[in-house]
Image 1 (cartoon, rainbow, N blue to C red):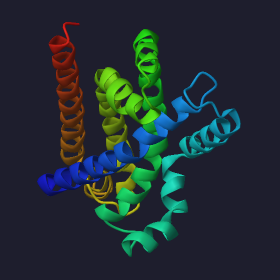
Image 2: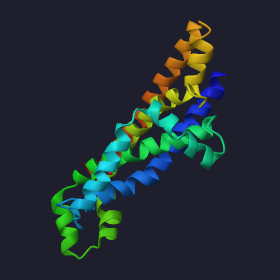
Image 3: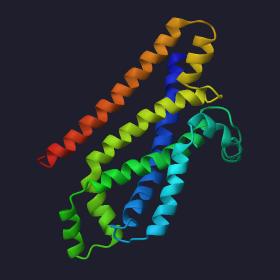
Length: 213
């Protein structure tokens, strides 16, 4: 049961994490480009999209799951199960990672950006060849933070039929007074967090080492 629950949790976390990467990375670039200091300053549009991102991020995840039940049923056909849990997990994760990506892009050395602009780089070229490669170590660290946050979210999803380790800990551990089982789920979560953090830290250091940093 613990093995199946762990696999279900990994399925929810990494699927929603990859979807958040696909949606959040362009959104982070958009927020950087349309800021006052960006390549395509659109202050009003930037504030509007930024406010929408902040509003979505401010929702407690437990409330967001319930609020998105109609959308989840529309997309998946049900509001129960691990696949259904991916919908609210992804919607919660996209704005979260967008802000993390935005902060990573703002850490890029302005001199490198100026050099690319001098050579006539377009916004698309700037994103593909300058911002993303230069911010890659920071993006990897922030992506690991996203996955770790999604691990916590996935346990809450288990409380409302999402499955995974959260469901095992509550329904088979807490409700049945099975303390060893609860301890095992906590231990597995700790191992997952440490593994994710360690892997992405190692990956970031490897990239920096290749760059001579």
